[in-house]
Image (cartoon, rainbow, N blue to C red):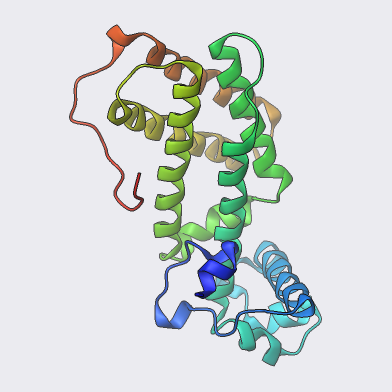
Length: 232
């Protein structure tokens, strides 16, 4: 069984040689140690930033020998990739598992978006991780796959709520809607915090855009954007 099959936190990390996990934690103590290293990597990323962070600093923050860090990761970038994908994997799981809220379709969509944004903050996806994608180019492929997976989660949600648009048209509008999430992060960056009003505004905007999918007459003609890195 491969590393990514054994450990879902790494399932979408690019498998370039210099980023591959060196050893898979098998025992409970090893899993705890690796989790501590990833938590420390996040703390160092917040404190020092992507450029100044070091493997030695991460090991010190985790309270382990630097050799323990290199036992699992070949470099700091590999640890940040695993950390980044782990957070996004949690969000994808949440997006599919959260139960539909009562109310109108628009209310159900709005409540879902609010829940996703609140979960994003609850699990610790923060400015440090949002900014890291601009520093480490290879995070971009993970971000792209995540965007497509979240768009597909929106497609399933809309279909469950009764949308009859074609799957291609739904994916296209859902991908567009997902990218609206970036506006909330840019607003938060400008305001220097995580103002709740950005969440409610995003939820209002996304639900308004997606409400059109419940009217067959509003399905736009193609061509549509299609998944580039994920299989349907």
